[in-house]
Image (cartoon, rainbow, N blue to C red; front, side):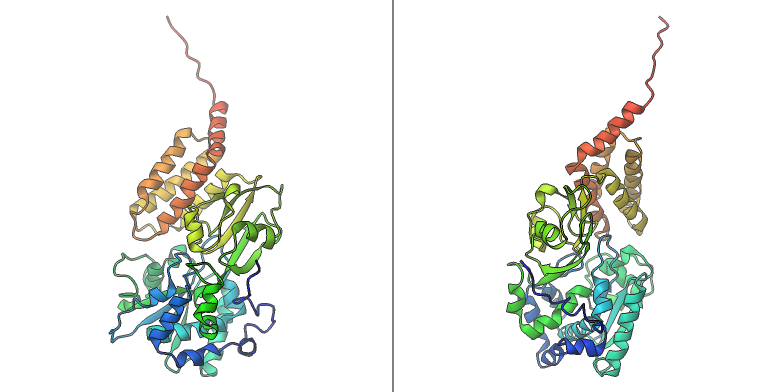
Length: 422
């Protein structure tokens, strides 16, 4: 299976990031077509294409757009999440650097669909070159008359907080507040940025929109599975021969992605485990990789497609150490607003660190599992629920590795000598 390249079709062109380069590859041809369509017709076309959000949640894009109140008289905002803070994920930066006008054209079409006059692009603060490239593209789009005639784009740089990848945390930051997530409902489509109806979409998701308008919903839907259309960009890293970004149909299997696209497993050559959707996704063993990489395929396998950050581990990788690294990240990035998340992430990191150092106890594993399960679903946003996936799956699927470290700790401990005075 080799998917037709859609998002990456012009990546090899040295001028792909320029206005002339984008036009030469067929860019800005969908926008006039969308202008001739009613907003509701654009929404229905995107629904029929089975385009799902490619930033993490995998929610149907057209359905999300349809949540905007029909008779709303005030402003409606379109917000693009370009924060991309999920470990193992590095695909949106390529779009911002190499095809920024695809995002602009997608925003123009999405804005018409939801009747928005203002769009915000929230770019991860560390993404300096993507910000420069995209900002230059916005200036060129204004000069060419694509922007400024009913729709404006504001480019906003984040400040390096992972929590601002969560849509309501992003909105809080965009409003000039601390990047804390908000309670839902109301959902952003009803009350979002600055109190107005707001649609938040991922970069990759919106970059697909011009192609759907150009070539039709049926074409796009036919590229994927029954419940998810099109292709997506997979960030593949870890113990593989050819790490990088691969655009493939969402119907590709994880095995095909690793062995046919990324060149197979390096190190000792024996696959041990794979994280299929960024660090928040539950880990899969080597026996579980014959699964399609669409949202429902991975959900049925007990994990998630997430941001499509595929992290490959061979048998030389220590799973307890890998969990410790993940736990340290979540402990550091928790915004601290919710007690279960703030306290649990910190303690779980300390416990995993203790286990890796050989000072753990077998009971520590059950403590982590119990704390993770009790905290799931009790917080304002899905940050902690995302952390729970690795906490539970790493231990449940590789418990013997964790127990071996605790047994070593017991064996190395000095033996107590009991002296009888009888």
